[in-house]
Amino acid sequence: MDYPTLLVTLLAILCALTCISASDMLLNASKLHMFVDELPQIPRILAYDLAQGVPKSKALTIGMFKKKWKFHRDLPATTVYAYGLNRKKATVPGPTIEALYGVGTHVTWRNHLPPKHILPWDPTIPTALTVATKGIPTVVHLHGGIHEPESDGNANSWFVSGFKKKGPTWTKKTYHYSNNQHPGNLWYHDHAMGLTRVNLLAGLIGAYIIRHPSIESPLGLPHGNEFDLPLVVFDRSFRTDGSIYMNSTGNNPTIHPQWQPEYFGDAIIVNGKAWPRLRVRRRKYRFRIINASNARFFRFFFTNGLRFTHVASDSAYIEKPITANETLLGPSEITDIIVDFSKSKSKVAILANDAPYPYPTGDPVNEANSKVMKFIILPEKEVDTSRVPHSLLRYPDASLSHATRTRYIAMYEYTSDIDEPTHLYLNGKPYDAPATETPTEGSTEVWYVINLTDDNHPLHIHLGLFKVLDQTKLVDLDKFKDCMTKLNDAIKCHVEKYARGKKVGVPAHEKGWKNVYKMMPGFVTKIVVRFSYIHTNASYGFDATAQPGYVYHCHILDHEDNAMMRPLKIIA
Ligand SMILES: *[C@@H]1O[C@H](CO)[C@@H](O)[C@H](O)[C@H]1NC(C)=O
Ligand SMILES: *[C@@H]1O[C@H](CO)[C@@H](O)[C@H](O)[C@H]1NC(C)=O
Ligand SMILES: *[C@@H]1O[C@H](CO)[C@@H](O)[C@H](O)[C@H]1NC(C)=O
Ligand SMILES: *[C@@H]1O[C@H](CO)[C@@H](O)[C@H](O)[C@H]1NC(C)=O
Ligand SMILES: *[C@@H]1O[C@H](CO)[C@@H](O)[C@H](O)[C@H]1NC(C)=O
Ligand SMILES: CC(=O)N[C@H]1CO[C@H](CO)[C@@H](O)[C@@H]1O
Ligand SMILES: [Cu+2]
Image (cartoon, rainbow, N blue to C red; front, side, top):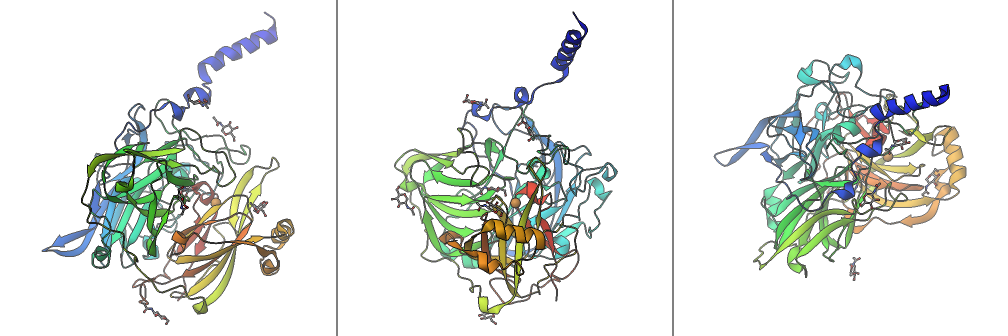
């Protein structure tokens, strides 16, 4: 054997021992049987005490634990991070917290995570995790909540196990949620700087519902633990040993060794099981569907023609129920629907998905990620006393005449020499740059969101709620983009001269108050944002101007982490 051949042979032997190719380890999700696990019952926690029938404020302690979780009958148990009252009770998603309108909740979020992260993270993006943090930084944000800034889970208010290290804007251990807002669907999830995508991927998510029985009961919608269910949906990839797979090689490895612009997995998980099944009665059910994916959009429909009736979107009811055949849900959006299984002609209904990924121009769905879950409909007819009323809850409209300020928010994506995204910014500014969006408490503003990237970005605003008025296509996009790249100023670049393409309306069921909306690429989206309660003119009842303030960001978690997020400072 000559020298070079020997070298190659030695290398080959060495590689056989150490180089396990990713495809050997990666589980082909199509090999897993669908619909073999029952939809798990997520534990519910009441966020109030009942003393002689009178609800009183309650203090809860919820921990974050590293544990094993079975996502599928035939998949070995997966190491996850889970929320729960204790390690044994911790689940993925975490317990559903049920709060009552007007009754505040105090939650002490405790981090019990050992130092080494179970997923690859990237030290080159702005991140809380360094060798010196000696633990996994976490911080909880209640998405859709209207509460004080100190309890908003600012990305820099992170803490590690035992509060041994804390981020620069950390202020308190126990968060206070005042629950003085309109009833609706919220969710809690991790928000730590540069780690949101991996901490959520590891399992740190859960539903939070605010109920207002005196105004919701008269609506007559399906209710009770059996007929009113949150469905927390996300996508994951696994290795054959059951561990969560996330590619640890970045798309620009010389710039960011790990970061990739979007995470997609082929297994669709609902309430902690891959493609579960649920036996349902021939009657109406209410499903509060939370899209907790990092980047996957879902377009849901039923294969047997069953339809959805929307009653709410994100955290607020809409005025009138809207019936549709399909529904598009962006990352972190919540849809709240009624499904009437008595209308089904078949015994089985598959909830399916046909959204390309990335949305809207990416790959078509495959066998695995095109299915979500299966409903097995019992044959017996049911007496169903629930109903879908003609009108739901009506809130004062977003009055443009009250708008005191117009802002332009431009979305930029930056690419490397090999034309791969390196990072994304809002208004061309990193997260650390001083706040430029400083609305007055109680005010209404108009925001024009200009998407100069190729992706659809779900924009999420903390504290404020907004209505989407319209989306207008930009013409002569390259010219406008050149100007924006040079000046970063929509007024000087005369955005009004370019925003004159076709207009795309807002789907009827998304015309209500929202906290996330899908910003179409190449369009200007006009939204009216309200920095007060939507159901009353009362002041917030807490100091919204306090430090560390709030944020607004893209809810594709991989974008938010790098660093499509900006501070939002409320002023008096
Ligand atoms: C996964 O398995 C399915 C079904 O067996 C097959 O059609 C598909 O090509 C496989 N995908 C990969 C990436 O191997
Ligand atoms: C991981 O990402 C890198 C960079 O985009 C890519 O070259 C590689 O094929 C990916 N690996 C797998 C297993 O998908
Ligand atoms: C829903 O689908 C049915 C049957 O395909 C069709 O007749 C109806 O027009 C569709 N409705 C909507 C709102 O798209
Ligand atoms: C789910 O949320 C992710 C990230 O927030 C988003 O990219 C995706 O499009 C959403 N999917 C659905 C079905 O809403
Ligand atoms: C709030 O104030 C506005 C203008 O001052 C008024 O038009 C509106 O009716 C008020 N809404 C409520 C719920 O009181
Ligand atoms: C779909 C679409 O119009 N995308 C555009 C979004 O904006 C970027 C930057 O201006 C364009 O390159 C895309 O073509
Ligand atoms: Cu984005």
